[in-house]
Length: 175
Image (cartoon, rainbow, N blue to C red):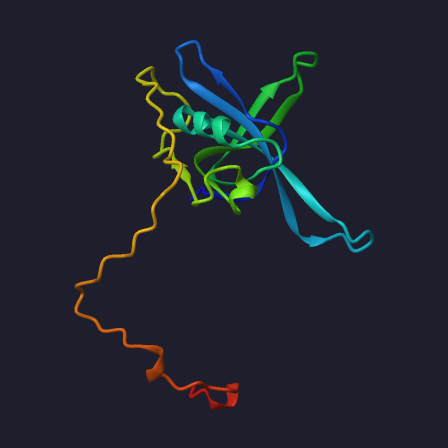
């Protein structure tokens, strides 16, 4: 299984590009903090990960995300290689994330979006594989109305918290 999930900040404004056949693409870098700080300096290190989005996902990223904004990226890791122009005997290897979907992270001020947890899924469309692309991207709604979940008809009763006894120490747990 090849699945990558990243949460980090954009290092620059994403730039939308078009192929000759009109397919949108966007390449951007996400700075992801490492889990632990450096022992000697106390500073937290970061990894800078290149991501590529295509079609409507690329349009979504370029429209709603800017430098410094938090972003959640889901996709797959892809290994690429190419020959050095100046030294044909040298091969360079790169890794990048092929983006399947992205989401806003943080509050309204953090993400620059509508603050409602907006996201866009690419539904498995990766790099271009034909020219059947239609330019019918629609922006997510500016304000989503919160809706109460419908009552479940699964026949189960969940009760209330008054039916449970509070356990104050681990010694009282029966397992």
